[in-house]
Length: 464
Ligand code: BGP
Image (tube, rainbow, N blue to C red):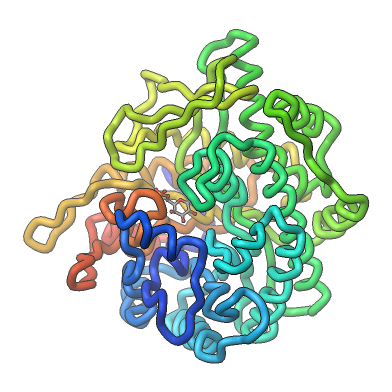
């Protein structure tokens, strides 16, 4: 029986670019997605869920359905249209209104500074591979803290470094669409962790009355058999996608074992990692100051040893069984016949969340507290006579909340849960048919309809 603490946050998540729309309104600058999506002409992010105009309605619904927390992100390009230089007062005012509305509705805002949306000019300068980007980001963060730091008390520096770098440099479905460059991905992750560290230290130096952390996507990696080479493959992918960043965040540097494993992967992929002399102190200083870790969890992976070249097919259409993911010097993700998957081939494995939460407590005892900052199920919802029966999503959420409840019993300090997503939003590489929301969005009319899961979630939060 699910047993969650009395002060638990029942939240839902959004991200600026996926929810707001209005991508050219009130002097907003371009992110690296704008031109790329326009050229591709497959998905149009211009209106998304029109949260930019409809946020009062969405927050009213959030409150009505028992939510007491929401993840929003601040679009860097609304505050600085070019990423640096001239500030945009209209953008600054927008987030004042949005944050004030959250607070007025009693839905606490957890605010992310970077959710996959680097400004176009800074992207062209190299994005996270350019060390200057760290200071550009710091300057943006400073303005946000000065403007909103007295009313927002939960800050997230960056959303999912691994997803960003995997999308940009390995899978190649995020601009600049580079495939299989694992060394670039590792370098960008290291730089993002440095950027996180700089922003944490700035926030603490400003003595603001709140808390700060980062959100990581953390997917457990299991060997598909007990063979040593499969165990090694799971260990390699875990180090690349999980341990590298957890070490940076909590240990303040990479353990000798983590670095040796990363260097092995780099060697097989003909690359090296550039670490500057000052990086260690930067990471160590921040490691003592993090207030929380945000864990995004949707799935886990089963790994098999793999000796071949890099090979990936991204299932962005929901055609079940079409995914391929095999990395040179790492391993191959394979289907586990005992574990169900979504139409996008994501294994549904709540135990992977439990295992990850317990592992963080054991391996990183200075973690303070955890919020599960995203979890949810992509599903092709049907609306029939204004009603949406998304029972598989309810089952999915319930199983994952159960896993959290058992982890709490095992002593892990988990303080809240944010369902991805509040309403249906734009999915970066899957468009609009992969829905996650508690509220169905008719993207033609922008009308919202509560799904069966919204009533279920309301019932759960009010009962507790
Ligand atoms: C997370 C991102 C979100 C969101 C979610 C669902 O990785 O933080 O922005 O998109 O995944 O992913 P997708 O839309 O690709 O199914």
